[in-house]
Amino acid sequence: MRKALVAGNWKMNGRADANGELVAQVLAGLDAQIDTDSVDVMVFPPSIYISQVVSLSGGRLGVGAQNLCEFAEGAFTGELSAGMLVDAGCSAVLIGHSERRSLFGDTDTRVAAKVEAALAADLIPVLCLGESLEQRDSGEALNVVAEQLRLATENLTVEQIARVVFAYEPVWAIGTGRTATPEQAQEVHAHLRGQLQQIDSDIAAKARILYGGSCNPANAAELFAQADIDGGLIGGASLKANDFVAICQAAG
Ligand code: PEP
Image (cartoon, rainbow, N blue to C red):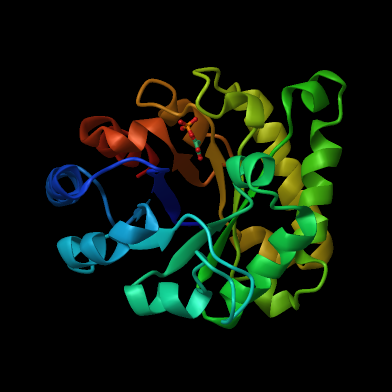
């Protein structure tokens, strides 16, 4: 039985004051509404606020980063290494988010290097995979995500792959208000789990595969009820405490 995970990707949103209120409301949700025996809750604030959120959450929320540099140190102006994220209190890091892939040049090769860097520092990589609308419309969705998964994990050991969390995020559903239907999402999740099965059956059984893309309180329960969907990676709705808490409840 896999424990659900709901992760809030704040993207480049939030300021110090607002973060304090949001975290306080999510913590109140953890106290009163969210079944923490059945769902883990994480937030991914902008890097500059990671220490603030770690301190506000008092260890009750997992805190992760939205990106990392694949190199450990050196002349990489503006970048943050996995070790630095660990020092700031992170336990996880998003890798390969479609905004990083499309806007900041995160190729499959770089994504793979970032996954290795995260694992080397004992950070949980949350590996994002997803097809564009064009790829879906031309019937390539399953092949695209399978290839992204293969390229990101081909140099990893079985033990390393076991530490990866996967997030299926169709690009056409991110921030668009157009959610994948539960059936569309389940089909891809089952395909990804099938691919993990070819690597190792124990990994396939235990891997958490999150859905992301315009997930909200109205559609979360039906998505999370699918056999191979183990929670969600939540963008816009993670900035509204009530919505985020409701989504966490739906996963629990
Ligand atoms: C995301 O950016 O990871 C995401 C899922 O965004 P949204 O929920 O806003 O579609």
